Image (spheres, rainbow, N blue to C red):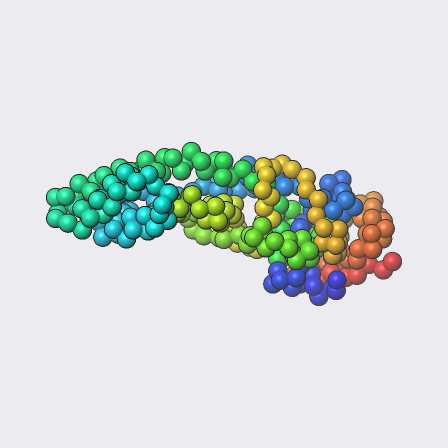
Length: 280
């Protein structure tokens, strides 16, 4: 790993973790194990809210297309009488105004029932472990917030850490919580779609956090849980500007034993942090 790599925020090769000066940081360097937390341990208490598409957002014009999609999703999976009833309802939606109004009311009632069913399952869907990373290795804000300026930054090779990219999600920052739209509510029987939605739930955050440039590695079991990663994944360690002598010695010793390149923040230009290689 080179000094310039700490300043590359593309996230294509390396992603980073800012760790305070604790035994847990030393253990992460020494043992190739990561702690995956539960969502309740994440730092934004308002995170992981979900907006549900209520029946009020379904217009008479949008319902026929929605029902057609739902029938296609569940083709052959519905009980025959249910499918027949839905197809009759679809025909009524195309019919005269009085029958159409009845059909709209019936579908909206059904839709609200589906939302309640989905809400009950959301908590189960969100029981996944999360380990957080960032593209911004030398971010002064991240170093201060997550390492108290005195810990260590760990650089991980992206492909070695997460060869299955589906388990690594870049956080989406937005002005509103994740919206579970109408068609998503009816596609829950599709395992791939359910997996995609789970990951969207787990990597959606308010826009004010965008400075973190966060990525999340998601474990298929509930946190907190310690999970071993590829021993080749850890590419380098960088001591923060206020790391004390005893912590620095311990980090240097472990890095020497494992052949991990060690760097230290050069803060001589106070408004620009630079990672400088530590001599052996």
